[in-house]
Image 1 (tube, rainbow, N blue to C red):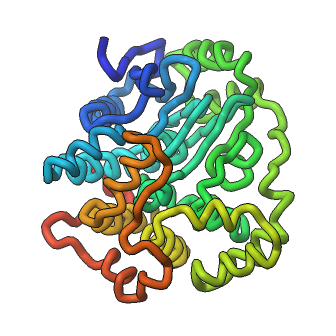
Image 2 (cartoon, helix red, strand yellow; image 1 turned 30 degrees about the vertical axis):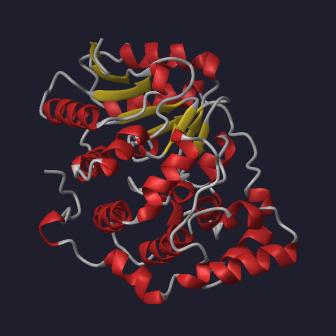
Length: 353
């Protein structure tokens, strides 16, 4: 069966990520197929709205296909760079789509899963939702527009999530701006049915979609991260990873240990990416920046080593290069943001071509 299931229910176009054994991890072929479907539906008057879901009960999408990236790195290939180029275009298309896009973020939603859901117009979490951007743990930096979202979270909550790889429950996801609505999992089938029942003659499809979601939504659970804003803001507003760690240790917070095991280079580049993102004007600009950073991460040794330690051998003992924060200087960080020449993404606001 196809890794992407495309179906129609009335005016509702349905896209289902269909690799349940891999928690619907996104491949290059899947990204291209989804993008092509969305292109076709954008100009199809019989399609009024789009629904994105994941097959199975484990999650919408656990991220990109990490093993494929590992194999590509080992072979000295560039398939991953082509994948990211097309994936980021897809992320931009979802964000600027001319019709309502409803994403059900049930179960695990990590990395690339954020990219296909957290830029939708109606983003739904459930009592089983667990969201995260764990990239620095494998020598990468939050991408797929994740840096854009993290940089705009209240206070320094986004910085904490990016550097510590802390996960978000449903209340946290809404608090940080990754989701809009909380719908208990046992109401999802009713929600899908309600969306499919929107009549073809409906004059206000966005309004009808919003009404269907709001009718089944409940108040969001409280956000654990929001309750910790005082120490998070105080510690993470520092200008360097070293100072953030010093403040966390002084405050006796476990986040210091969580951060210390991550790639020193990825940590410093991620902090710089977040700070730069606050000054950008659009998601498209941020995706351009993310491709530059991701491409440089792909050429560095930490990505393959991080995947080896976390996914392949699972020894959880990566040997980072360089191995300490002190060995990563300002010039080392700045080069991650330099233009890519022919490999530039080149997106501008509203441009998803």
